[in-house]
Amino acid sequence: MAHTDRERIAFSMFRHDYPQHICEEMSLDNLPIVKRPMGDGVTMECNLALDWEFNREGYLRLADAAILEVNQIVEERRQLLEGNVS
Image 1 (tube, rainbow, N blue to C red):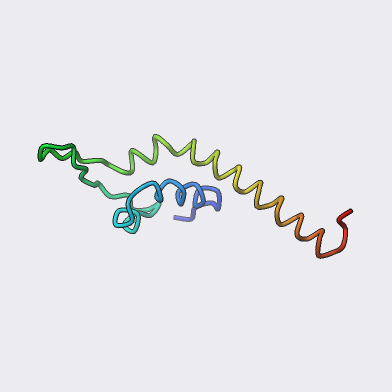
Image 2 (image 1 turned 60 degrees about the vertical axis):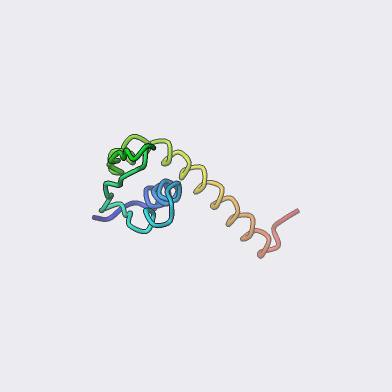
């Protein structure tokens, strides 16, 4: 499945909220179920696909902001290289 740049950036931010060993297992096409310790020997299963769906819109808004800022930086650098900065 092809994913948009926006969704890939959003998902990158989402997955890096998790520990490295979990982050490495995650992709947009494969979101595992992980066990989280709750204390006193109790563990809880967490379906990361549901977590992604719940948080997706917020991360997409962050990706939009990041894309706009990167575009602005690229435009400023382009103008600087062309000597169009006053």
